[in-house]
Amino acid sequence: MSQGFNNNQNSFNTTNTFTTNTFTYLTPDDESKILAWLSPLEPGARHRDIGAQRLDSIGSWLLEAQEFRLWHGGNREDGSNRRTLFCHGNPGAGKSYIM
Amino acid sequence: MIDKLCDEAAEEDTAVACFYFDFAARNEQSPVNMLGSLLRQLVGGLEVIPEAVVRSFRNQKKVIGGRGLQVSGILKMFQTITTTKRTFICVDALDECVPEHRMVILESLGQIARESLDARIFVTGRSHIRSEVERKLGGAAAFVSIEPTGDGIVGYLREKLRSDTTPEMMSSTLEENILESISQLSSETYVETIQGQNDLNLP
View 1 (cartoon, each protein chain N blue to C red):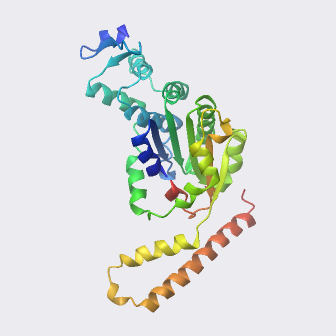
View 2: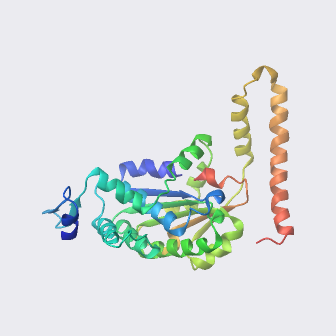
View 3: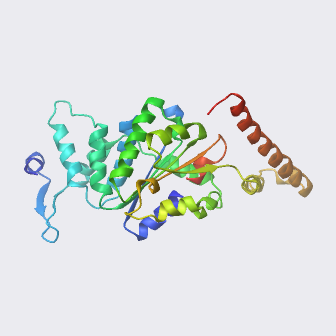
């Protein structure tokens, strides 16, 4: 924490007296640098492209499937076998469009 | 599905991150960049960047030239976020990832699923990687088979015909013929594709 204070005059440290969690305030520029450091890849454009080509009804069956409901509605007490859902199919089956 | 999850996230305290693998971009879609991208989305959705992330960023700057992220470091930061918030991670076309990278990514997703009780992971991919997924996740996943439906194909064709730029050339008979013949052809092609893969002894 003290290192963060020394490195950046625009940042300062504080203690949240309600939760006792310590955190650093950052400028928007600091935040942009950190996000860019995490990864140069931004898949948002790909998601928008697919969404624009998809019909509204595509994939609605999956939301009703029991496997999806168990995966989506599970809670912390579920075993790890409920936490991952793998949808597989052949080329052209529409896998990307259900996402 | 992601849109549904995002709608829910707007009302509940949940987070959603997604990633689309693309064979054409396989060189840049390394495990570090891919997992980092998921983390970036989760961090970007928070009001405050977690201290663990800020600290890692500042520590790497102490190294001359900066230090690149590593998978283990990303997973540690992942855990600080996913243990406090219900998180949905969606990954498309895992089969388009470089096989060596896929091993690392599956192990990482498996680790997140084991350690983050509130994380939910959704993955799509071609059927031939199912056994790989089962092996790497130790059977700790549910599986759903995706197949095109007749209604889906007809709905798609109707939408395409509706946006036809030369509607004066179309008649109701021609439209019905198109719907019938392409639907038939699509299902036959799909079956042939599957049979072809079986004949080639593909998994």
